[in-house]
Length: 284
Image 1 (tube, helix red, strand yellow):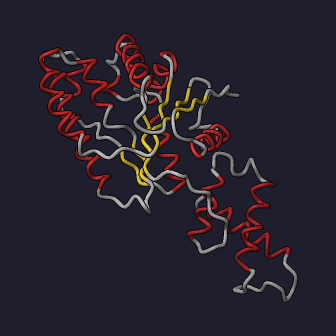
Image 2 (image 1 turned 120 degrees about the horizontal axis):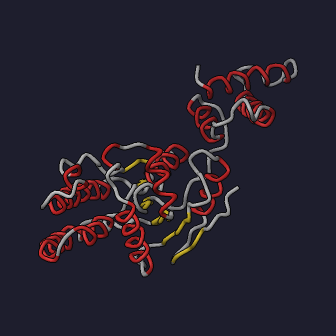
Image 3 (image 1 turned 90 degrees about the horizontal axis):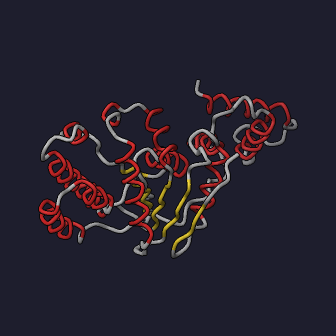
């Protein structure tokens, strides 16, 4: 039995103990709402018991079981793209938002056959690596355009412009000339997101997170290259005005393991407006 199922079962028993005889009998009109109330009381009374579980996860399991829990308020956007340098937490945030708001994830394919050669600085590997990523990202972005954005929340772990940021760091002038012609041709058919979330992190933060997740192909990433990437992202988003932009400094927060940090970030996302907003949390 999962944690969510245990909570729901306990909530039902809790409500059975408190309901009066002859009122709200099983299957009656008030049964589901009474169970919902019992679950809420259980959550309030047993915070340690459900440590690490998001309340939204419990409520979602209850809704799947046909109980009348209030729904989690939706986000005012249907297509959100999350950006930032390597190790800043893009995929983690996509996963968390998709879980809470039942969104469809669009994560880039990191299985690039040339990536190992690129990190080993082999001749010509940068151009091959970048073209492979460009075409793969274009295919994914075109697939987004075919989805029903009126009823579906799309959560992408990158923007199409990401490819150009990396290209200008790794390609020489002759390679960039060819790359730019192809990029401009492909970018015309790529849909723009309703909101871009730019996650920032300093070098120490990114190095720590990269080491913690332990991806083999990232072991060869040098601090110098990572700092250049941080600077390139800052330069790109300094004048960015194509969509609403939320800039989040992640140095002092851990939205993956700290539920309060995640909830606070969700509120910032929900309240994002036109133009650029900045969120610099103090952490805890």
